[in-house]
Image (cartoon, rainbow, N blue to C red; front, side, top):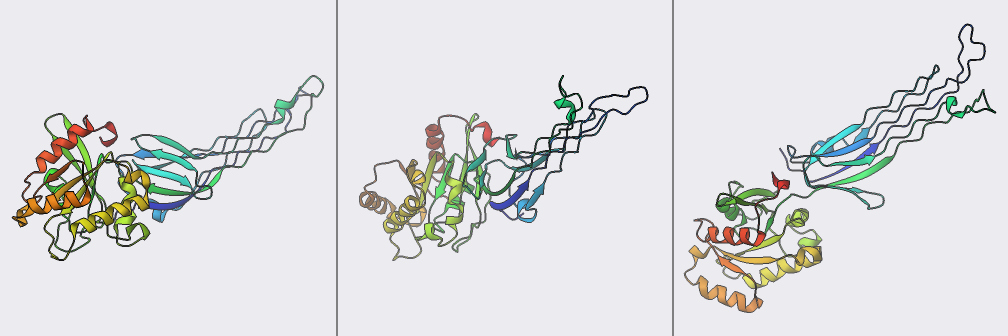
Length: 340
């Protein structure tokens, strides 16, 4: 199934049924009095987080969702039937915003979480509610209110503890294969990864965390260059970023320091909150260069790096366990129930 992480929909809640003005008309009861019932409630529209759904693709094709109207009231004190609510099931991690106002409607971060998208109209009052000692034959009644209508923007933000950053072909997909059971496509050309990939990393018997890989970033990503800008939102929920650096690039003229600074710059331009997240360096492909230690030392000096860093060979798995253990220690607890 194609990965779709954005959609736009319109929701229309049902109108409330009208109340009615009616009077009892029965034999031997010449002055029966008011008997008009209330109108039924219009149907509301709800969003429900469902962990069994992984994409918003259904909402690319079904963009309009309408609830039914409530029934009008009837005589003999009979109330109109309320309309059934509509439930729209969405992936866990979906963020819902009002397109007109930008208001955040809901952030469905847990399985089973519900959010009201459009409230159904209230039913009108029948004339039996207007009876009093001075008005024994009221003819007043009220109409049902209109249901809410909204145009909504849906955005899926994957739930992951750790996010991977890096240029195309830095080895992010190979790294996630080495530390988890995820099996993204790996090839020797840029942008092999076309959509976010998730993997569960298990450390020991009780500890685990979720790691996310997005398409590689390039300079200008925050303005739309490359593919990675489309998926940067998926890193917004992470607690830690692992910046994968190719220490042995195929292009000998490439400057890893310049490229790393460019990625950091793109992060800051896209979202300051994302830029401020804890970030560790992971130097990959050390098996391809005997002088990798000298290159790493030069890199750290040029970047004035004082944070944690690691060296790995993702293709062979060398050093990857150490990274996983340190990440688990940093997170300090088993994976949360949001990922279960």
